[in-house]
Length: 111
Image 1 (cartoon, rainbow, N blue to C red):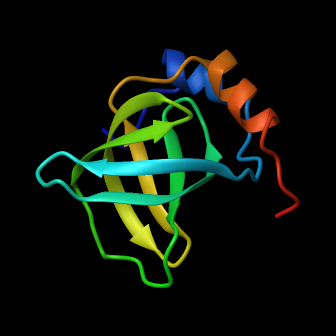
Image 2 (image 1 turned 120 degrees about the vertical axis):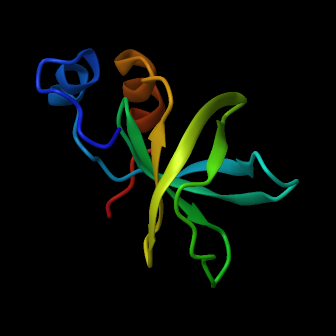
């Protein structure tokens, strides 16, 4: 699940995109509980994103099925890992490259 073949559609889409820093107000909803975390998407590609919870402390999670709500759109995903930067998510279905470009371009940051 983590390794995408070099010729896959999502790998090809990501060649044209980069992890540009952004700040998109979002929510991370856990499928197995009613837990909803407010936060921001810090970068986004067609197959992955980094979500930063809007609190000082980050719960250590991995393998949880979640849904990322970004500006009204919901993207099912799984948490790949947790770091001090946030939760790295892998989308169940790739997000169209033009949608990612629109989202990120409209919310770019310097860092």
